[in-house]
Image 1 (cartoon, rainbow, N blue to C red):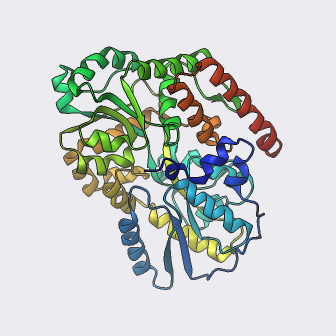
Image 2: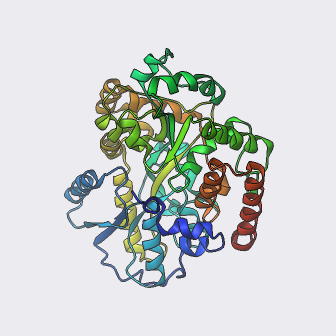
Image 3: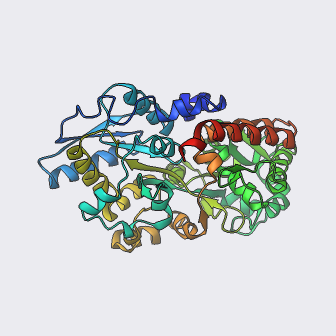
Length: 431
């Protein structure tokens, strides 16, 4: 797979730093770009179909239209990934038909909200009688800015630690994930022996494919972070220590970086990987061995992730009301169960885990329960990744440099300086 397909053109813009905001937030202004030209009884839903979910999305749409025969939902293929959806919306802001509901990821929603191109949903949800208290607090509050919520959680995920139980047994390890990264390092030689000389104990996504998301766990685990609020902290001793640990894993042949580690893992070519909960369905189907899942190494340092659904700011009030009606239906307790069981993402409603079909599903699929059990131990991501324009791609590029052997302290110092410049030039005056 071409590595650029995962981040799309936004990744290229992100590496340029200053270009990131333009790529992510659009050049149109609220009230322009053809936003009001859509039909009020047709809800256009732009999605990248997270977790190969097009079929289940259409199933939920059919149920919605049955309950609301006066409304039609048009499902639009808006891109292969979250960043391509953002690119398409960016183009619509400059002139063109805008959607009614759009998938926005952890790294794309904020710049649209900052530039007043998404609708704050609180009043619309209150008018529609939506009980927002039933959304999982950590997931709903991820979309908070300027005292408002700008999206509803939809295809939400965390990373999981996936491991090959057969290789774990062969290596003489307990049937569990490592307590922390130091313990994993202790296990690595046994895992290398179990998996074979031409294979790897651990595979990770590369910097073009969300290594920046997973590495937060390692940085937090060693006492570092990407930022404190808006202040970049890549040069913090803990972050540098984590970078050197990652580099040592690469130098010692423990870890391999590639675009699709889940494919190698499912084929038995790696003993373990870090991967999204949204990959659980595919891995469970494709693996030729018993798959184990565990919390990420460490304590209370798993990042949230995935995407929500938002409503553009410049469409008509009638379209906004219908959009919220559909977005709430798409993410209600019953439909989040339908969606997550089909994909591996996490239920976004508290009451969902109490539904009989979900209770029985989790009993039969303990790997799916791992993500739910881990949720109370997650934390929101650092601003430098998810709120700075191009942050994820910029960090991913730096991590590729670290993996290739460049000086960690120098790479991270440059990342601090570049991140600070992006904040000063593109964010600071708008807060």
